[in-house]
Length: 387
Length: 69
Image (cartoon, rainbow over all chains, first blue to last red; front, side, top):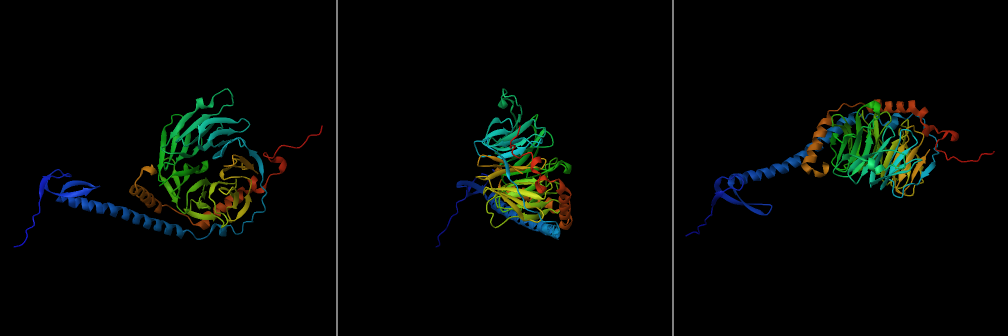
């Protein structure tokens, strides 16, 4: 006599398809459910599909990246410094601090020049408008600030997730805070902002991974730019002659070039090894430079669609926080977390000069609109003007 | 927002972007690099930080000195 084994089958309503069928127990997220055999089969294959999809997406991405590299390599017939071989080397540079501005009581995080080439707005934990009239704007943790093209307003924002516009008035009796207008709203900190060609529109970059274009008057979102896989740290608008594009850099190590009207990303570059803290268009608009936590600055040529130069030295191990070009584009100024400013020969790739003076990280650096000087801001609470 | 997206969604976004970019038109560096060089050479004469400004014309020089009356 053999033992007889009985399989007890339970009939009932399937928890998934609600049909009356023989049921089997299944465990989903440690909860016991009863599925019919058909649903059990489907669930098993779905799980498989899910994993397959993720892996196959990754594979597809890798192979596309490989293909992109191949296409780009085809145009890499020559190095930039080779093209520039016959260009005269630069002589010795004597650049000194001409002014030290000590109005802030906190780390300077950002600054911008007014188009009149003399006024500056700079920001820290409290926003200041620094010139002959030092005006304090009551916003806190201001990571980004910008002067309006007319010189009549400034925009700033930071950990408040917003970008606000303050019309400038030099009437000391007026309360600046009262006239504040909240323009942009992100879901994470504001890392960068810039007016477009007029006082009417602002472009913002945020820790929420997006950039956005806003109408100042109505506060309406005009366009949003999705594509970064992590916080966006910086942006720069193309020089007006070259049309409606801007470049952004982020914690995903990517620099992306966007079409402002369509919201599409036109080109992207992923050659840095760490966060990109600063991006700046080359004066002609055909290229842009980036500064990164990987201690290098790089030049990307937009028409060749690739990186064409790296500005680095073994002795430079601290991140570059901020970069800007001189008027002709021959010099690239870069501020670093090791308190120095390095000046690079854009064409030859060599360092021309190293500037000391700040007593803490250089956090922001901009060349004046007429190219006669540049200003650096630092965690040592000061701004320095160099010429 | 990047912070709210799943790994799969981020990958898909990247993939769509890559597909577009592979089709972009590109030019040789020998050509574009040359244009960058030429742009610089044309502007070099105007670049105050490159060629320096005489001290008396420098708007940021500390105003100092004495006047003799």
